[in-house]
Image 1 (tube, helix red, strand yellow):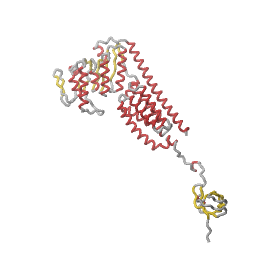
Image 2 (tube, one colour):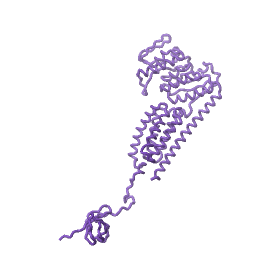
Image 3 (cartoon, one colour):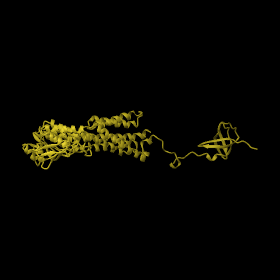
Image 4 (cartoon, rainbow, N blue to C red):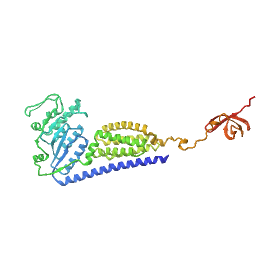
Length: 461
């Protein structure tokens, strides 16, 4: 029995080792890339650091900007040029990025390249200067859900309106314009700049309108023109770009991708433990979990403690299959695994929801797989399912049923067992409890397996 368990345990151990190697190796590559970029920035001396924010605003962008601003500070840069071209994104990430810009010792000038919509507007308002490309727009910062529909919750709208107004007032911009960009119930009329908004609309400003309203400090056609307008064209320029690891992490921390990775991870490991034994599900599951933690590690959310908790939980779940613990190892392992996943995410509650969805969907996949491939499962190692039939090469015991009704003579006394002679065959028999003397005539009453029952034959006249 033990020989059947150890290959599975060794296989899962190899999968776990491969997963740890992947996570540590990828993290080391990311750390080396960061160190090289930081060394380049430090060696450049006072400079202008150009940082792109040309994507959906989410936790991956936030993590990249934290690293980029840190490099700008280490390089003692005179200015950060933050290029924005986005339709917006997560409000929580925008808040964190706005705070990063406000607290940075290096002043920021935002260059709007195309559009700074929704959360992108909030980020731009936290900068000291806003420079816009001709034809670009800023505004339309109403709060929407994942489907793009406006959220009318008064508390949410009031909160975000206040945040926008405070960001606008931070550098002397008209807070009423910011309110009109968020709240459809706000009316606005600014005759001097020709800007107005009726109730039920959301304000969006073109580059020219933004400059007239004091929301854009300058209009420039490129980052180079912006640097020249700031009088910093004699400074060295450092372009900080996302590393390959950060670009990958941007997708891996997306809520939909995160949930998909958890589904594949849970289903893969569970299928390997329960069904196949081939190793492929465990490998795919380990890679999925590795990508989940790698993405969150690079994004700055997952620490070593969250990875350690997850690994501990996985080990305990594996041990539950081989060590009798009455479910204790499974319960502790499940709690540890869930805690590791939650601690690795930027929003633990959101991660818990993703994990719950993953478990439900993975359970469906596992159920279908068990129904179709259950005969190959590990549980069959603990259950004797093999039939010892003649068609599989086993020689069955000779059946005694044909003896029923035949007559014979007791060769030995039957007390109640003994031997009788039936034709030319000596047969071991047993009575129903009565004693039959040697030489008495008997008749076979029934046969069950190898047991033959007889009774004494009474003489009739």
